[in-house]
Image (cartoon, rainbow, N blue to C red; front, side, top):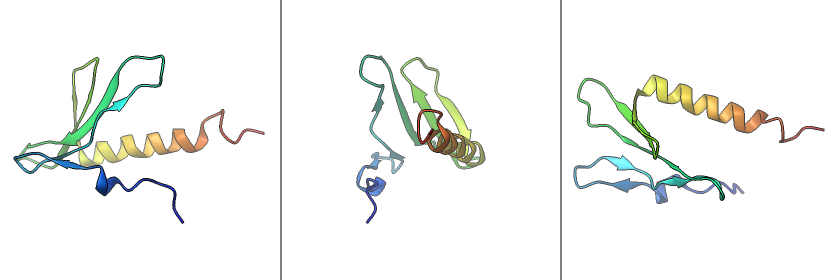
Length: 84
């Protein structure tokens, strides 16, 4: 049984039909947040990644996938996780 939360239950849809997720707050003791949401760009599918520090970054799906892959690698290979 998977313990991962179901993202489908966390997605929000704007009145214009674009998908977004709630802010992800920084670790306790730190300030800031990050948020991801669909872009309305008509030239190609894009995703916005914004932080409290700004400005937001407008990513193509290819670059958003690269960001996802880099985050996944860091999560799976973090020096404090699984080191023995």
